[in-house]
Image (cartoon, rainbow, N blue to C red):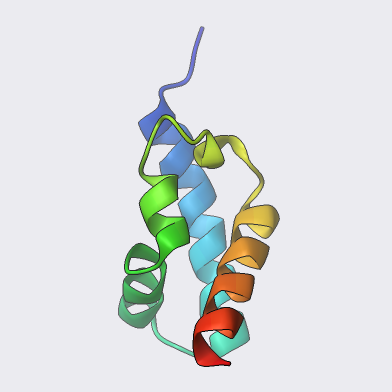
Length: 72
C-alpha cells in the first residue's frame, strides 16, 4: 500500500509548523505564511524536488537557513 505525496506532506507539515510556531513564537497563520512564502515552501509543494520526503526537522532547518540569509 503506497501513501500519496499529499498525505506525507500533510503529516510532515504539521510538525514543521509546530517547530516554526515554537521557535519564532508566532501563531499558526503566521507560521503557514512564513512557510509557504519561502523558497523552501515552494520546493515542498513540488513533487519533483522530493523535499516532501525529508524529515520535518530537516525541512525546518532549511527554512531557518533561508530566513537567516534573508534577514542578514
